[in-house]
Length: 149
Image (cartoon, rainbow, N blue to C red; front, top):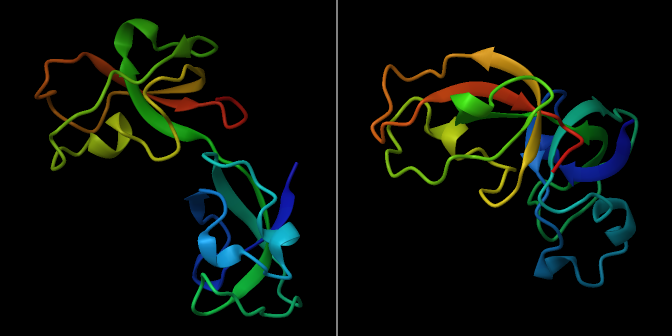
């Protein structure tokens, strides 16, 4: 089910994904606080619709203002140890990786997932984008359940 919220105009496009980080200092005293601060911090969301007829509102955080959108929790793609990689199982990320140029880095350290959390695997995608892991890890690319974590 989608939640109605306000986000920066630059992010207000269908299929844009973001991780809600919570309240900023500039939010203090804002008349739109209840409409903006209604998501769960640390959760990755996807914009599913933009309220085109809603007014553009001024915002102390977003330089081009905020717009009303509907969002829903988004799945997170991640590399997990292959031995744990099957749909319905629970898995953790294998740990940080210093190889930021690796094509799999964004999946080894995905935005919106924490190393100390366990997540339910919704879908097994298959081989990760890299040819070999510089840390010697055997990894499989999966999609975590968007409503878990």
